[in-house]
View 1: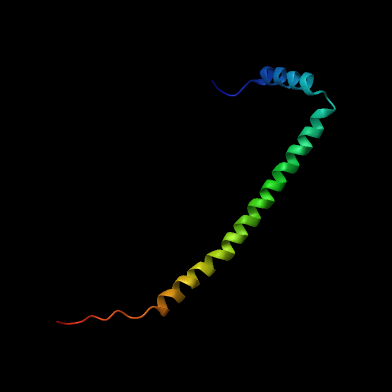
View 2: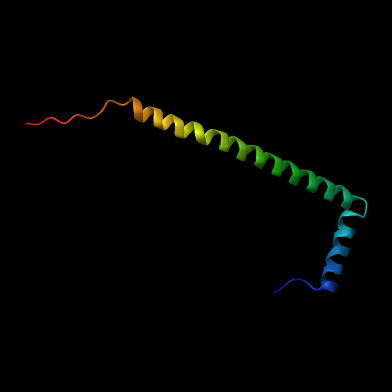
Length: 76
């Protein structure tokens, strides 16, 4: 089963217009566009926050490793 052909797409679009009305479709598309835009901006903010936190974790691990007491071995 592949992509719908031109006539099938026309029938699907006609059903959508009947269900929602011609005036409601642009409003739905506008709302969908805003939602996608908000989602992308939040994803970018999360990526930036993760990028800023990653160096702090690496620095924190090296500090912990350098403050540990060196291991000594005892000979019996």
